[in-house]
Length: 284
Image 1: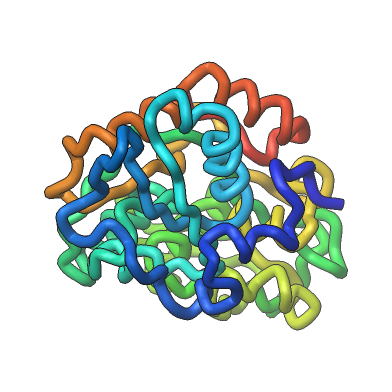
Image 2: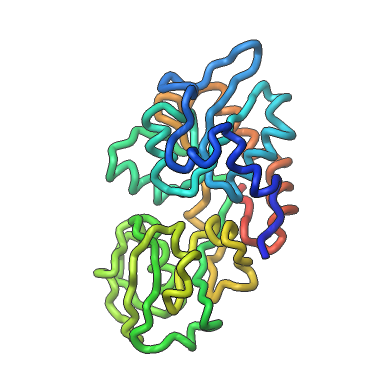
């Protein structure tokens, strides 16, 4: 059973007016590389986001806070971790809201983006899930574990397993750079298969277990507090999700105002009241 949502899932793909095409293509007619501009006292911001919880949070802002702040949000949902940054870089989005600092760092290093990340808004604890086992003790010799194939979430997933004594990583390795080659001790001879993060919850039946990002767990109807075998701790987490824009737009009044709204008392209360199982935690 999934947590409650700010708007029905069936409406997510209507938010941008592009429907399912938003999953493959960035929205057209956006603010452009120069950033969002004010017209008739209202600044329209094209913002891309993972549907849940990011899209839910943005929709709450649009429905309850944006008008009084002189903003209007056009929200484009993405179920992919690459396209929102591509669209932002190309000028089809003014901002996106879906990524963590370590993921942004890896994207900048890999693709040369000139992006700015604001302070974290919320945390979605990553967890280990399975359709066949309910505890780490049930892992058998040679079992196959699914992990994300993008560097940031791969390292984060392996770190989660190391924090729970499933494996031991080389001392001093940076979590952003962790690969399976950094595993020093693997007592159960587990094998690790890297696939797209969004595919892991859909293919759990193919593996003994899989490490799933919080937003994808929610979209798959998983309840982290009850169904995760192990779950990241939210306190002092370096994996908070943040609003990101192009470096050239970091002082744009509309984008700065949107970030302020995302850190408002109203948004904090919305997160706490909507995700009562702790699957989404305010980072401010």
